Length: 399
Image 1 (cartoon, rainbow, N blue to C red):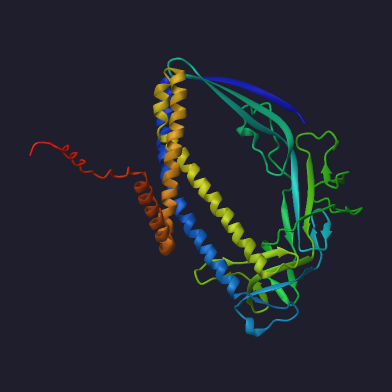
Image 2 (tube, rainbow, N blue to C red; image 1 turned 180 degrees about the vertical axis):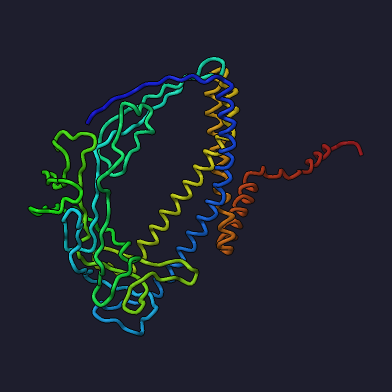
């Protein structure tokens, strides 16, 4: 693997940096605003998905795979069994075939790849020096890399034409017992395994001459141990015929996507014999993970956007580099807290909209807790005591 690097140093004055930060502030404002509908939509999506899966878990019917019952037409069914397909799947251009559900060809070219590392050093007066190091190395990649976009495009060039690219091949039909799987169901099968292709003595050579190498891949080039830019390598993966569990809608002899009462799609596929309850439990867990990831993305987007809005302030403070650094940290802290507060508030309001009873209850509890904490923190009132009565006069005092 070859490695090279090119270093470039650029200088930006105070005016240019301030102008760039103002432009960034406009983009940051758009990002900040966009975070609100993302967070709102995500809560609605999560609740709709939860309700659809709960409805499916209550409605699903366990059926045998050896016969199709007309009484289950249109219903959500759970069926397990061996998924099989015929005939052999083949990549005719290379002459590779396999007995399975699907075959995919992964074509990689040995190419130059560019990466960059940037370091900025502030200078007195509000300017900055930016040191950018462009690194070039060769490696395998299954996507064409356009070397014309490289910083040093004249010295690092990749071929623009590939004799062939990655592709996929599927068996005409896949069946689970008496049921036929639609393309939607087959797309949910993710059990891919490595296939070591076996080249026939007289394979088609449609795309040039390939030979098998020790790793099991097919190779086009002079020396697999010392590849050159432009060499090709082909790997194959396939989906074997195996046992799967499917939760889907029975439509005639097919298993297809089920649509819940709220319009959400329900379709679950698992490897092996898995009970319906466990499949729905796993789907609910995945829905929860996606919900939290989108919440995090929305909150970080809000934080980044708000930080960009206030970035011009730190640029002005950069006239004294130390002051600008302190300002940047302060802005990051304040915008982070504000973004967290606004994110939580947006999520809470959306829950009131999508689930009024639960959301209203949570808000009522929050208000009650706030009022209780205020009362606990208030100083207790001191009762006003009347002055003690005067002592009685001594005995023998004048009458």
